[in-house]
Length: 451
Image (cartoon, rainbow, N blue to C red; front, side, top):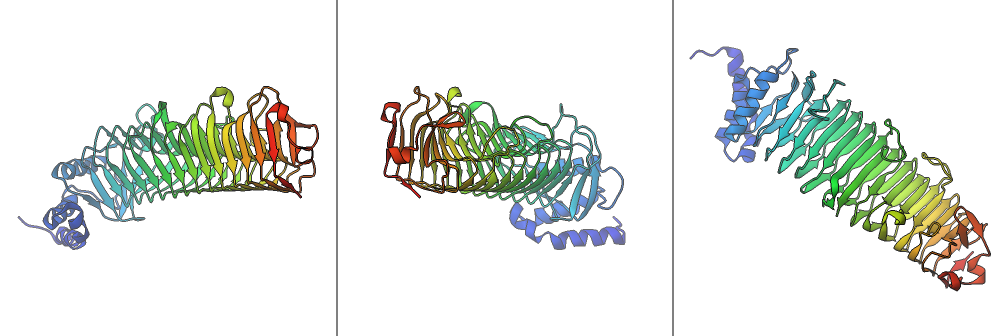
């Protein structure tokens, strides 16, 4: 068979660049073969033509053979691509671009396993998606053991990545300029979302949701999330850096989250959530939320600077209870909130909660708030430092509330009182730091220092 000079050079380049694939597939001959085959399919990296058909053929043939499909640098314009089991596509990071030409859905998979995408730019080009077919540039359903790594996902009018019923890893990806959510996971079956950069998103950064309350166990760690708007409006369902809904056992740890319209981390009806070691700055509302029907939350060692409320553990009326709030540093909590109302609170809790070893500085209204109306039960406030807040610690005065222990706290610069009873937003009675406990109301005050 004759071979022209151009094709010979392309085959030679493929073999030369294929050494690194050998380890991935386990056989150098197979790896170089898969690379050479990409040219036989007729893919043209710089073409303005639609390459959906030839790229789909390349995906199916390499997946069936157990090979990696390596796409050289360049732009590939295409519509819907379906990924069968075993699809592995690797590009040149920052240089291999798949540009969506618009056709309802872009990169999709259903009930496939062992999928891997790496080193690709997935560019939606602000083309319309059909939500009935796909609400993300990458949309996987019931897929196991997926790996999305070193991707750039951008330009979606809806989501960047949507995963439903999936397990696997999303790591070291950049997801930017999406209209709805950067990464939406629903009903995960063991998912790690780590080390990603998420910026300029319309409604939410990372969402870990379940259709019904239950154990999820996802790990959301070491991500950078910034500039999250709330274009769809609402009073908190949008505008969040990380949003956990109905998903139990989720760990949110070590993330850097800034400039969100509402919250950095909002856990709604999410039992046994752990929110630890996160850095959160410039939030429009509550920085860290555990709300509604949850049982069990650990919120520890986080830093919050500039929000309307630092940490809120709330909605005892809906079953929200049982938390540890420990070792957090919270500062610059303003009265102004994206959702309205008079905020300016460092930590607010309601039921079955220990608040210990926290430092709150510059809450414009109350440093630590215990209970709201009758929603107050078994709260311990111990060993905290509260500085430069008009009221250091505020405790609901409702006689229907339960026991509160306030002990060994240091409160400085509380010009309206170190420890005050509150009728909702209004302080009442004398400063308990000076007159002692309100034992008849179940409030015990011991060993606090007021300066």
